[in-house]
Length: 257
Image (cartoon, rainbow, N blue to C red; front, top):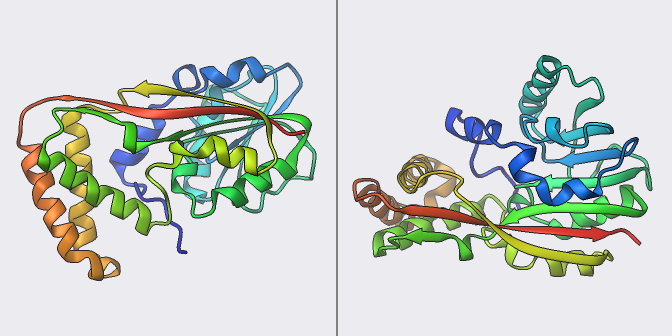
């Protein structure tokens, strides 16, 4: 299956990523960090979360997109974080020795992966025995939207289709804990955390813009009718009233035996 990053790297997507911080996104992982540890942040994006992880440890951010790594390195220089570095790498082939990492962290990556099981196997490889895994992934099936009209539902179905065509799973959080168990991790715990990632109206505009772009993309020719219908619903959604939106993030911690 082809794999891409469905949100893309447009100005709105990068701004959304850069606004995320460890203070709000990595609270569940903070108890795992100890001075002198080596922490890896997989799918680090522009590094805004990475720079807030484990202040007394070595931290390495990994992202497959070289442009994001450049942004992250610039942010680290501005912040004066000499113990943080960033590298280009794949979730399926990390550039680290087996059993060398103390904590592996990841936020908002696994919902975009075509093979999360392979990524978990790779994280298990690089973690030392007793090392910790801390990841957070979204579950759109439990997102809270009010009002959730017929147009909202139809627009979101188109949004989910785009996520799947990019190789991801919009409902990844629903089964991530079970996948960690199957990958051989122990002491697996999970909890749902709701966050207002963006406003109800901004979500509508975001979904509409992605659907409009997909309609014009020859790669989505076989889905054009379905996407066009979803785009019409998104158009109605953006021009409706205000509402509330909270995303469901499933936060998992586990141990590499």
